[in-house]
Amino acid sequence: MSSDSKVPSYLECAQPNAAENRAPWYKNTAPTYAGVFLWFVFWSYSVNSGTPGGILSAGVPVAIGSVLVAALLCHFCFYYLMARFGQKTGLPLYIVGASTFGAKGGFILPGFLMGLLQFGWLAVNIWGSSMAMNQMFGFEGFPLYVVMALWGIAAVVAALKGIQYVAKFSTYLPVIPAVILLVLVVKTIGGLGSFDPAVLVAASKAAAPAVGPGPAALTAFGVFAFALTYIVGFFATAGAAGVDFGTGARNKKDVSMGGLFGVALAIFLTVGAAILITAGHYGSLMATAQGKAALLTGGVNLNPMSLMGEIFKSDTTAKWLAFALAITAFPSACFSSLIAANSIKTTLPKVNPWISCGIGCVIAIALAITGVAGKAVAVFAFIGASFGPICGALFMEYILCKGKWSGPRAGFNPAGWVAWALGFIVGVQPNFAAQCGFAIPAAPVVAFVVGAVVYALMSKMQTAVLPYPQAEQQSAN
Image (tube, rainbow, N blue to C red):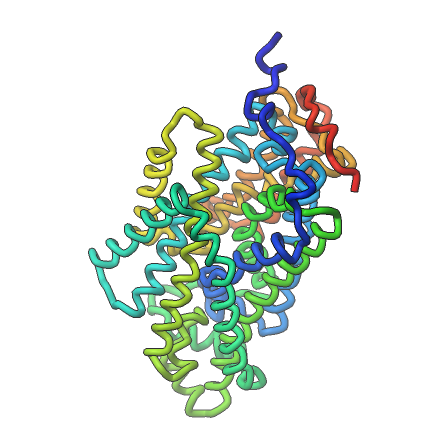
């Protein structure tokens, strides 16, 4: 018997999550996902596209509308069918993915890749949290690097030894950023009527160093493409993890409501709040000739968290709020480390997790210290390029199988791997825009589409489905 025709031990040992262990959507899926989007690194960088005026360059309605489309896309394309697979089978992502990428290939995609990318998330968390805390301490150079190192080490150690204690208090921590966002919206909403995107663009250009023409302000389509790139790129791995979230859902309604509230609504509210805060703050300055003149000479900051000192008219208040937001981010760092540890332990069972996660931690700290992790848009775009086609292939797998998981396929399933490879190439193309002379807009979404289409075209070239009793135990609901 060929080794490819045997079911690997990791598949044989997998057991579906029992019905008695599942809970309503408002007790697991929705609050957990909402906590992800309340992470300040997500909403605080959502306005700044790196171009004059950022996401607000075409006005508030265009920005809000673009976020709404991105939020719905995340729910319906990147989460819903993944979660339905999990709900029907009760099996986690690295098991369900064996149908798309093969029993052997599933070890790498999405298994090992999910673990590796979590260290990228850890790096972003280290950088963002350290910079937020540093508003209180004002460290520079080596002392700041020590803070980053301690933050990363503490997160990995907690993930490997004490994650249960972190989970106990992390349930309530998302309330802090939610309250801060609400208060900031209330304090700035009065300036929305005076906001003028043209003035914001002009002020952004005035603040830029006079070296060449610089980037142009985004058109309405550019704003739409940026919103898709940023939001979908951020959500791509969490969308694939919808399979795992789905294992805790009782039925189709739990999957749907958990995604509508925890994914779509949470994205819309958090990024929407960041947009309103920034526009409202600068709108209040534009309301007077003196304020507008000061804005045009003083420049702008398109990070709503960095505006807290001006909004509250107190640097001390802003420092304490930034410190609180940093503390609320620690559980996210721990959970990223935990997912990485679990993925690596599954794919490399003979390697001591303290060694593998230690290496990942060192890399994450290095990415934070060098500032690479601080380029949030670029990081999210790369993650979207990596997991966009995975979500696309899984999406098409669900459709082709008419909602019934087929079970693992032998070896390395070529349909899944070719779909991922071509989708990834498309997804990372903007990184080589200078060499190509153009950049594919909304690349993570296009990568998803390529992954889905290629998987469908190669559906007749897949490896054989292996005998797998667990595949027959899935729910028809």
